[in-house]
Amino acid sequence: MVVLYAVIAIFLFMTFVWMIAVKKDNYSIVDIVWGMTFMVTTAVVLLYSQEFNVVSWTIAILVYIWGIRLSYYLFKRNAGKPEDYRYQAMRKNWGDQVKLRAYRRVFLLQGAISLILSLAIFIGITQSDDIISLIPLYIGVVVWIIGFFFESVGDAQLRNFIDKPENKGKVMTEGLWKYTRHPNYFGEATMWYGISFVASSVPCGWLSFISPILLTILLLKISGVPLLEKKNAQKPGYAEYARKTSVFVPMPPKN
Image 1 (cartoon, rainbow, N blue to C red):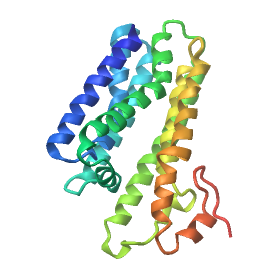
Image 2 (image 1 turned 135 degrees about the vertical axis):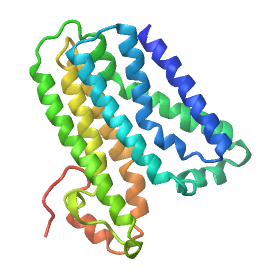
Image 3 (image 1 turned 30 degrees about the horizontal axis):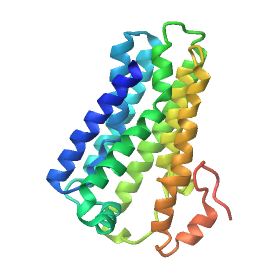
Image 4 (image 1 turned 120 degrees about the horizontal axis):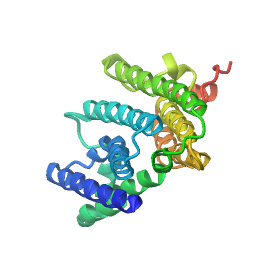
């Protein structure tokens, strides 16, 4: 039943967000609520299961810190700016059917993906009445902190770089971006590996690692890295930067 309640909650939430996007005539809002979808699922699972213990609370706190920071960052980044180029292209391709197509193929699809990636939340919280060991929890928190550092610092460094007019059209190659072309995506995946470690403190918790594995595949092969790599390839110097710098996992730059 908890899965059904979560599905209903996400359906209603994404429908509400879509209505706001239509009213504001800007579909970029769907990016801002990505982290919020996991927060909604976490709240539903926690309240339904009534499992209030160290594992369930740890998972909830980690998800909420991640979700709030990401949503706030994206809100500030998008405030006062035109709709993202992806959604502008979507409007041209879908024409008069853009509203319903965006509802099904962007908003509801994102909600469905977030539910699939929330397996660690479902397992970790609903099974937390039978904790096997707290060692995975401690490991998970450390891994999550590492991921949070990469995502939050990477985002801040990029924002500071972009905000300087003299950097327009240039490639960010300093800070964490010197060691990975996508420190924010690496950080997001790492945080979810951390949450899965926490969830592995309970029976069958190892199944929760399906969540970060799927997220890593999504980021590397489908929605994250490929889109940005294609966009950034047009910038002068990006080919050389890509040759020297790891695409995902931080590594020392090549000579």
